[in-house]
Length: 286
Image 1 (cartoon, one colour):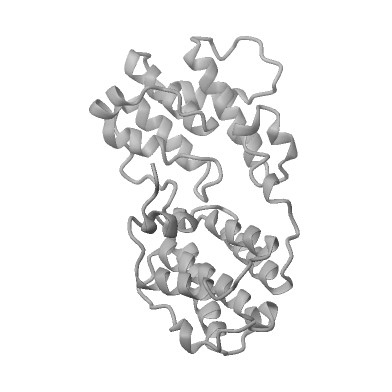
Image 2: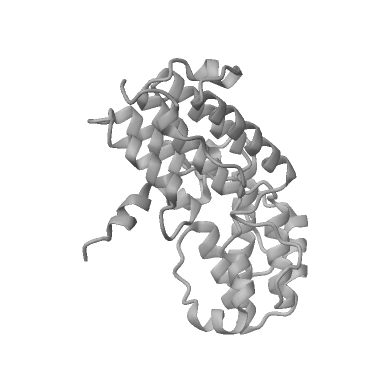
């Protein structure tokens, strides 16, 4: 089935959750139409912007990397390598991670898998999983029943990005809890507390009242987002600041990428500030 024009227009904005393009997205699209052939490196940078997440524990680092890439008009990473240390890439993927998060997340996955199989925490295991973690998970889940088994399986699918567990029946009975499960991941700034709370919620068969999951933002991330939004929009209007110096010359290509980044940050965190008029941010030429 052919896509509607607004669906095509929104494809690069998948991470902000819009159903229809607003006037600012339309204006950025109109700016893009003046670019002609977009270099591959610029397309790769635009794809990085589409993958930006406000709830990621490396949010600020990712923003700075994108700004630096726009300024140099080159990437210092292989986009295909992003997420390669996540458990979804295999139970040994954690070995490529230097933060310790992937190993911790993998340990939760191993423990939950053993629980689903009905294995005791004291059974021999060569993976050096802390006994304390077994106690934490098994105690939180409590007495086993079919609902908990299905919900834990759904959580494992989410952590491994499988999404194979049939969810329709679960959603009918545990809609809010499934919503929480589907927003649990190791890359969230609240990890491992978010996974602990989800496991406890499954044990109680009731969602956590103070859960912070995918798509959320705390006060620190909101301040970071506002700061970079203001820097980026100032640069679009010709003002000089530290990040503006990193961005360098205000070419049409860079202005398009910076506008995409600023608009994405604005919507990810829900800022009420407006984007600058792009038609007033310099002539439409490279």
